[in-house]
Length: 94
Image 1 (cartoon, one colour):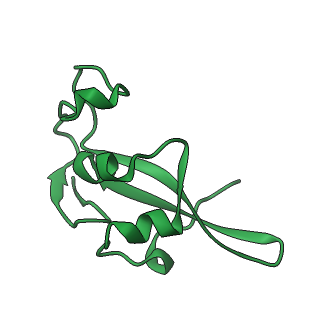
Image 2 (cartoon, rainbow, N blue to C red):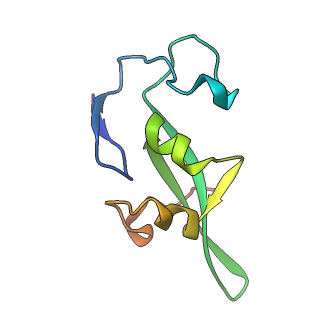
């Protein structure tokens, strides 16, 4: 199945594994992995509710994010993504 990076728009076949191209990041070894990574993205807080979304990105965009456990909506915007925050899929918490 083909999928697009929600940040840069690159399209890849999800069944084709890849070697993570940034070994100095120290987070992935040399085994092939999925071509996309999903990260939780914390959006604005309205009252007592925070708007959490899921970003799916290619390895290049993941590297640019310097992600840890999650990113903020400001971090997402720094990529100048093709998908605006409000069009990202909502994070399902149940």
